[in-house]
Image (cartoon, rainbow, N blue to C red; front, top):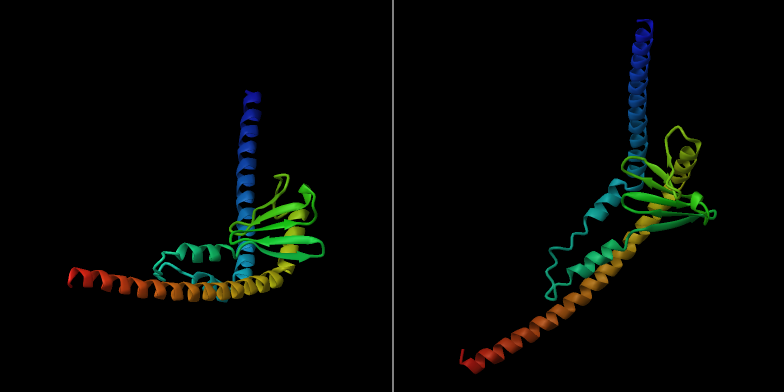
Length: 192
């Protein structure tokens, strides 16, 4: 009987510990997500989001159906690269890759949606880990540079798109003129 009370208390204690760990883990994830959303909003500010979202090429309607080429140009925005004192940061739309050196254990991936940080050796870090705080601080310190590089990349993209559209429109106009000429010739032969 005495053993059964100890076992019951032990099971209850284990259950309470499990619930506490689960709640703590959930709170830590919530806090990580809050930090990561703030970082994402700083990098992808409203003006940058508007510029990214404004590039819908589906309505261009070029005769040669080359909207895929323009969509490809858009896809070349990422990754945005910056170097910082021997470290390299690669910004993608959904993550940041950090290489502090050429070693695998000095490489990290930070997921912007939920704040997960994973090393090149697949070790996951939590908000309470010193490594996590160190890497996220490095990201935060480089936000202005990431934003500037992203803006420059968008400016270069705009120029490439403008050049491509101008060239494609001229070519489309030439094709349309030639098509009208050929249609006229063929219709004339038919007596129409």
